[in-house]
Amino acid sequence: MMPRVTVLMPAYNAALHIGAAIDSILQQTYRDFELLIIDDGSTDATAEIVRGISDPRLRYYRNERNLRLAATLNLGLELARSEFIARMDADDLAMPDRLERQVEYLEKHPDVVLLGAGMVCFSEQTGAETQLRPVTDPDLVRWRQLFSNQIYHPTVMFRLSVCRELGLSYGIVPPWARAQPGFSGVEHLSEDYLLFGLLALRAKVVNFPKPLLRYRVHAASVSNANAALQQNTAISVSALFFAYILRRPVSREAVALAYFTRAQPASPILIEEACGLIAAACNAHIAQYCPASGIQRRIMTDSLMRQRILRSYGRGLAERFLDFLRSPTWPRDIEELRLVARLLVSEQAVDWLKRCSMRLKSVLAVMQNKSAER
Image (cartoon, rainbow, N blue to C red; front, top):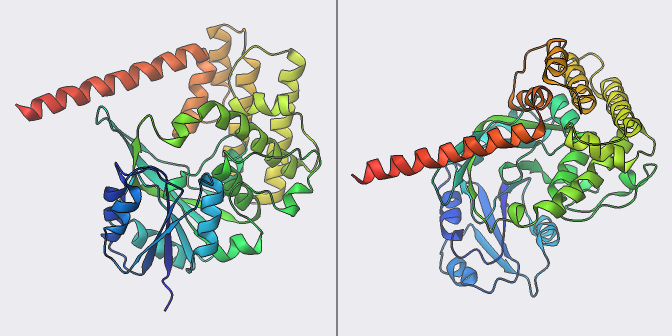
């Protein structure tokens, strides 16, 4: 009998943490799963550690050469034998009831194709922890997916059959999306942003409101090592989403300005083009996906705030504050709060406050550790 869930875990030189990651899956309260580990040509002790674990639910496959993450994940989708795919990284820790909660949710909501979740980020160096709570409404997830990935990749569980029906896989744009006007290709580094965004355009994508994963933050993680390249690729993915919703070619320069949504040097013409792009996408999104939904007001507020931020470059604090007062609602989640911060103060001030906050958390964590040792 085939298992209900395939936990897909790619690994590359993961010897330091993979043992703990595997234990967090094998000790799940939900038992009907297989753990599929694909070793992408590791040169450390990853293979020895995995082969040393005796559990019938564990399947190990080793690539003959390093294929990189997107190709390795797609191989996993081909090898999977289950209804649901749960993603897991080789350096993270799953909460004990993660699989149970996600399977239960997907069983109760057959219209949901992909379910993400919140997560707790913990620093390997300082021990500091930050809890991330994603937006949960599917219409808001789809709208904000235009500007950034709203799904935390290592937390997802999705229906494999729907991905196959839509021709979706990691890092590959299917024919129905390639047919969009102005499509210019997308590289592989933002494979999760691309896959989840395309799924959201054609099906219901939701986030579970509570954290189901502990995400390890360290210098060797893929997201840290390739941040600049990922950012450039993400703009190309965002341009594809805008073109799909608007059914017309879009300017990559205007998309880049909209994607970052921050006051920055740019010509007035380009700023207005980016604002027009956001406004048009907002109208098209509401018309196509949520014409009778109560979430319309939040999407429209989000759109107006992003336009005000782009137009605020060069304005003084008083003018920015008046723009904020014209906003129809008070921020209700972390993304709206971030937009308000960008409107009221300069981007440099936002970055400075963020660094101060991270530094303070690190100092407090060190002090707590020293107190515990005493």
